[in-house]
Image 1 (cartoon, helix red, strand yellow):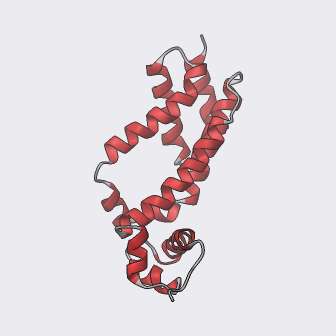
Image 2 (cartoon, rainbow, N blue to C red; image 1 turned 90 degrees about the vertical axis):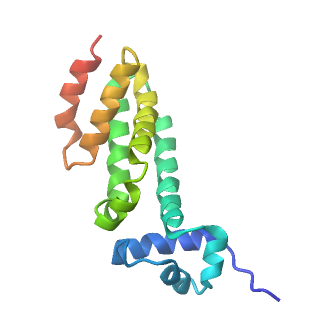
Image 3 (cartoon, helix red, strand yellow; image 1 turned 90 degrees about the horizontal axis):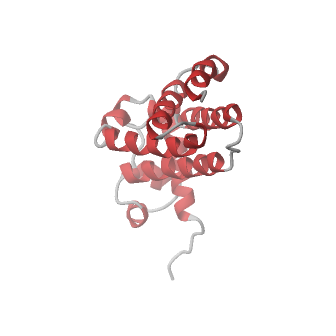
Length: 168
């Protein structure tokens, strides 16, 4: 009778994240993740067609969590809204720093990155739009929030410039 293992998908995602944090992207393999979970390599492939999809899945799962946080932000106060978005983006970057700063992972992610960045900017612009005059303004601010949230810059240094842009 086959062994029934609960939460296999979640175990695989958690282990892949752990290994990337500890070993880096290049030294994390489907085999190492499977072994740590005491599963056969084929079992991993039943859930994820490749290492890249395994990694992309945990990053995407993180992103969905932060998107949900941003959706709950109030839109009546520009400062609160933009600070909340900035904090969510900063935390997402921190959570995935080991992956984002890995040269091998960056080369793998480079394929299609312009399209993904445009999608990201559009998602953030959708949250920013209530405090802006039009789509271009929202996308401009979204781009600034994305860029500066990846740097160690405090939101208080960024907001005065954003405030000048959103003043109607």
